Amino acid sequence: MRTRPSIGRRLGAWLDAVPARPRAASGEAIGLVLVLLAFTRLHAVVATDVAVATGNASALQSLERRLHLDVEPGLNRWLVGHDALITPAVLVYRLYYVVLLGVLVWIFLRHADVHRQVRRTFVAMTGLALVVFRVLPMSPPRFALAGVVDVVAEHDLLGGAASHGAGSLTAMPSLHVGWSAWAAYAAWSALRPTHPRAAALAWLFPAVMVADVLVTGNHYLLDVVGSGVLLVASIALARGWGRLAARLAARRDRRPIGG
Image 1: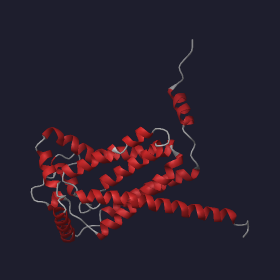
Image 2 (image 1 turned 60 degrees about the vertical axis):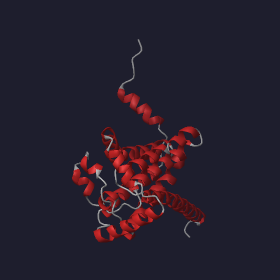
Image 3 (image 1 turned 90 degrees about the horizontal axis):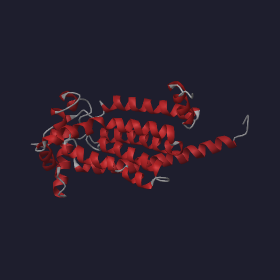
Image 4 (image 1 turned 45 degrees about the horizontal axis):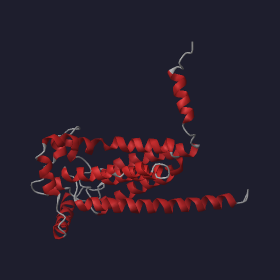
């Protein structure tokens, strides 16, 4: 009678099936963790001037009114009037990091062909966002617009204080939307050659996040536009980074031994 392989053997077989990654890729993963830790620390201190952030928010609101884009109060009132949707909206806002982590691990393990480009895009996005936060601190609608209900604070999984903690003046651009768009870009890049329809569906994730940050009063519509600009700029920067790295590697390979 045949016996089933042990769990350890099955796990070993699965790990053997995962494409081997070069040692350098492990170093890149460690570097990415360090980037995230640095971002967490800097995000807490990069925008702390409430007066400046409030003034910038007022200017942005005036621009949206002139362009007839001031949709945030109406969308927020709509969510407040639909109790059944509030908890799902808060869950989407708080738990989207699970999707980001999943995409990072999936790309790292299964799609070495696009890992370096999407990883560089992520790092570039993180750095550029910190620069914008420093130059243009922005109070979110939940702080700066009369009548907007701070839905996440009232129904938060982490407690109401989390919604008012460090980094609360960094509404422009929305990194909830920006990082969600990055996850969609990563999945699209990996799936497009073999599963183009599934690749297109990946963009539903940032679309849901756009709706979520608007109805919960966390971002302005122009913050979302800023997130799109941030992603495009980050992709371009990552590609330039890749070309420069390739040129430096080629120059190093041509260098004579002992030269």
